[in-house]
Structure formats: C-alpha cells, structure tokens
Length: 269
Image (cartoon, rainbow, N blue to C red; front, side):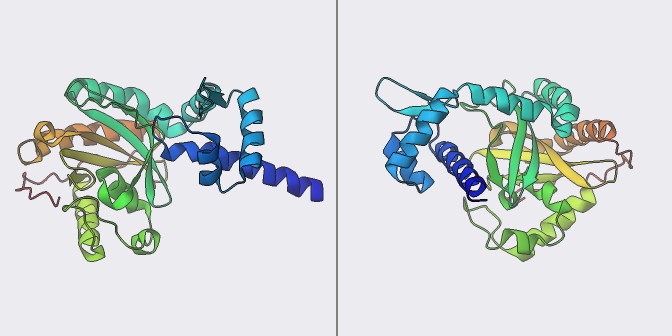
C-alpha cells in the first residue's frame, strides 16, 4: 500500500508540474517558477521535469527554460476528437464561422467555468491565440449562461460573482432574471461583460434526454457583432446550427424558438 500511495503522489506531483504552465501564457518557465507554482521543492520539480522531458511532455530550450512538449498535442487531440459533442459540432461550427466571418465556439461546463472544446475564427474575428482548452467564467459569457441552464442551483455553484468589466453581472437576482430570459427565447447574449470590445450570442446544446451538455456561440468585436442591429439575424443562425447539432446528439425536441424583436442594448445584455 505504501508503494501504491507513493506512485499516486508522484502522478499528482507530475500533474501539478504540467498545470503550472497553464497560467504562463505562451512564455517559457524556469524550474524555480514551476516549482513555486506547483507547490514543490525545486529538486523534486527538477526531477519530475527531467522525466517529463524524456517523455516529450515538456521541452527545454538553450536557456534552460521549459515549455509544454509537442507530444501533449497528440494526447489533447485524442481527447478532443473522442468527445461526442466535438464530433457532432465541429463541422457545423466551422461552417458557421466561415459563413458569418465571426468566431464560432463550442464549450462544455467544468465546475463554474465554460471549457472550450473547439473554436473557429472567421475573417472578421481574428485572435492571436486558440481558445480550445481555455476556461471562462459562466456568469460573464453567453456560453456560460446557456450552460447554467443545466445547473440546479447556480447560486451555490458560482458563489460570489466576480466583475471583469463595468458591464459584468455581479448580482444573482439579475443573473437569475437573465437565465429566465435565456430559457424563454432559447439563446443568450453577452456584450462586453468579460472583456471590453467583444460581444457574443450562444445557444444550448442538448443530448437525447434533453439535458444541456454544451453550448455553441458566435463571438467577435462588438462593432461587428453589433447586437442592437444584428441580434435577430445572428440568433437565428446560432439556433439553426444548434438544432442541427442537437439532432446529431440525439435530441429531436421542438425547433421553434421565440426570438423577440431586437432591444436596445445597454451593454448589460
């Protein structure tokens, strides 16, 4: 049992070393930085980095700094490609991005965050980084509001609502009212609640039981998404694409959504 416990601890420490890179963006890290982020002694972190380097899970440059290794892409690709939501949504999300010029994103819920399974960039919504694998807060994103439809008690899950811009919803009563609106109209919107200058629309994705298992969104610069003028147009496209994905996931529920006339957006929608 002692040997088994030691093996588990070693795996946990190796995972902590790998996760230390998630907060570093695209810059390499020194062994001391990794040890601190992982909560390990530097000698322990260095030994683990040596083993991970041999497995090609990390790479070391000429300055002795580390990056995640290319072999992790193989594992990540296998994980993403084997996910049933990714399989059902990938082609349709890609086509939606190409047709609108906006970013098309698919995410599932991981705790209080939206976890991005895939994203495609249209010509009007370029990004300097990939969203796949990233996490964003549920209450500050259109994707997250759709994912919250599958949560019994959003208040218990989310706790205190953190503000990211002056437009972020930080009051649970306001969020509850918005989720009621999302349920009624079948889609959600978000205008500069997570980051200034960007807006989004999203629709829930459901499995054969009708449960919300993921969400699909269109996002881009607020000037291009232009919710006051384009909400009706873009929401129909998102809903139609979501319905097609739902059908592949085994959900064949009603496809008639109530799309209200475009309202005046004050960046709190």
